[in-house]
Length: 81
Image 1 (tube, rainbow, N blue to C red):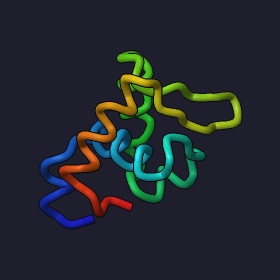
Image 2 (tube, one colour):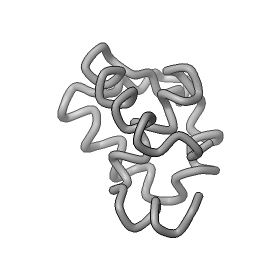
Image 3 (cartoon, helix red, strand yellow):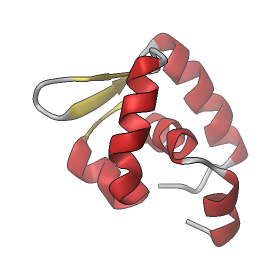
């Protein structure tokens, strides 16, 4: 990730964009590679806002609202993954 992308995007924005670029569903360990330790804070915010569902097997999946936001962010920041 470029430094400018890291400064502009919040951890929540990075979670949504990366998850969208990975097909809408990914395991926590794969997401942590791109987001780092901030994944836990981002996941709490995203689930509280209804953007992401966290399954018992530690996979994260975008909701419909999350997909829409993730798509918008991915268009602005296409090279996060």
